[in-house]
Length: 198
Image (cartoon, rainbow, N blue to C red):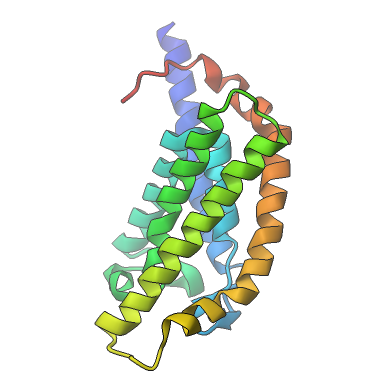
């Protein structure tokens, strides 16, 4: 029994590390494209998938690991950036939002009995909305309070999100469909792991 628990914990840790790595890859696949001050990345997709497939605890843990690795100084954020200077970046709110995205996406799926496409679409789009609301509001206040750029209006920062939104809506639908198909496979072995961890 102890060997089984150890094995399952190892599986969870591997999945957490894998999604942290996917976030680093997704941060830089397309980050050479910048709209306003927002690099276009694939991170929203992977943060949603982390919550959908790993659940609220391990999905958000993967995002925390990714964030900490970047803040320590490894160049895992968009445009191969990293370090504590990211804390004052206008886009830091998006990095913070990924933790909430994964948690809420996983929570919705865990709480609903039916693990069907409707459930996954609801959860994934809830994650997407959180990402945009938290990240865009943080960016606006960062420009206003940290950079003191009053010329950057509330409407302007939301206009910057219009083009990435089209990409993210498509990828969110893809995430929901993919999660529906592989959720059972990913969680089949993990389902025997004791639930009472925290």
